[in-house]
Length: 68
Image 1 (cartoon, rainbow, N blue to C red):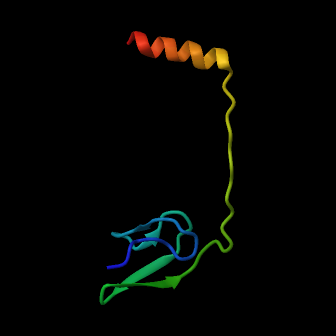
Image 2: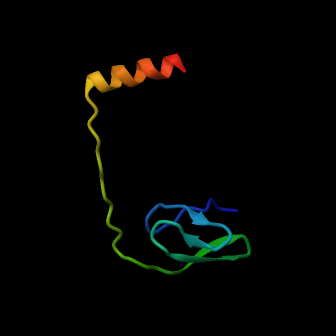
């Protein structure tokens, strides 16, 4: 059987619901082949986020973790 990877967005297909967990594309399993039935949210928008942590905070958190 093929891997449960969405051909629309590359997300994971839930093998129970046969829907992509990221974009909602629906699939069906026919004779051990995964077939795309419908597509949602085309195109998929990819978002990005970031976080900055100061060197002092990293050193302080690291020291606390070593004490536990």
